[in-house]
Image 1 (tube, rainbow, N blue to C red):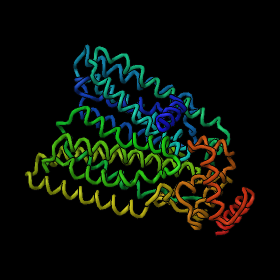
Image 2: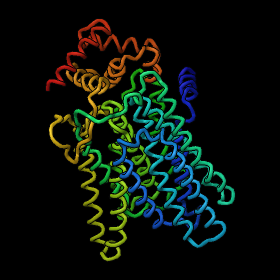
Image 3: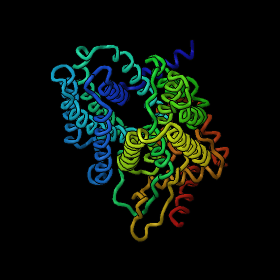
Image 4: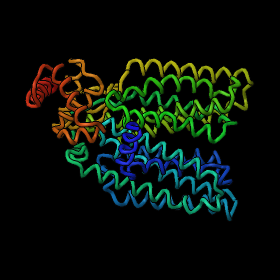
Length: 480
């Protein structure tokens, strides 16, 4: 009974608007479902993805001038208009015109808006500590999958009003979520990146991994034969486990526990999604959806964590990553369309096996060398001399960033656990105990125990001692 009470109180404490990205996922899944809107097509979806690529790269390039996006009223208005108009065109084509032309252009508009909307959400998650990212994003995924499951049973005639309203709710909730977090004491929005005196390298490793996985998704044939209930179970399983871990057993919760499940599931999914192996469609779809959603959680936590710790623009980080990822999907889809018809079955099977081997090798190599959520994933400090190289992102060495870097170095040298490192980071930001407890979703006694463990490992006795130690680490970083 106590577990249920914890779970209820934890879920009730999450502002509903923080889960708006789940509405976006459900809306996109429904709008591009050919079983519901018959004029939708794979070709239109891929063309729309090209628009998403363009939007992500453009917003990433102009991030220093535009960010934070949620404060740009014209961005919010453009997303609202384009997404709703795109929905109307797809719906109208299915119910009235039935030509496929309106649906094609509607898909382009909708996916253009989706690309911008997603980056506004990335700004929101980039201003949160990793525990809140894991909780809110996972809960949003669960809500989105449930919405998609129940609404997909409706006909286009009944569903179309929701398809117009859902994207409006999504972008309004994204704006509201960013505004609420910006109003919190010590919010990361308060120290947005400015022209910099130092640089960090871009996390290329994770982007390469995402590109290879997306290429494989585009190249492999779509898995058929799975029931909607099985797909729902596969998509919602890992997010549910993350939510339960945060809310019910937060005393022992480690954010990097997600690795233990995501990596093996994703590796198996990369193999079983190949139709040549004869794996039952339901099993393959379950594993693929579980691995895909779990990997999405990991990527969101890692990129949001990098933005949160180093003060980097979430729009720039995620815009580049998503632009490259979706480009890889398009290339994979195009190669599948061009090469597969011209090759015999043995050659096609060899290509897919080779792609699976490369993907599995990358998974194993990169996750082993980046074994926790606080890994840098290739992010390195670069001395501020000369021009920035292509793989470098500008960063301002203000107090927040220096404290984050000092806290990271201190934690690794003194053997702090991932949980203790997160608490130390919040302590370094001079948050009160009440603020830390709220952000970590833990009880007061639990926080006190963690802080005592941190002090013992650091051989200190108070926050004043902790800040003095951090100051010393900051000076060491600046001197280096």
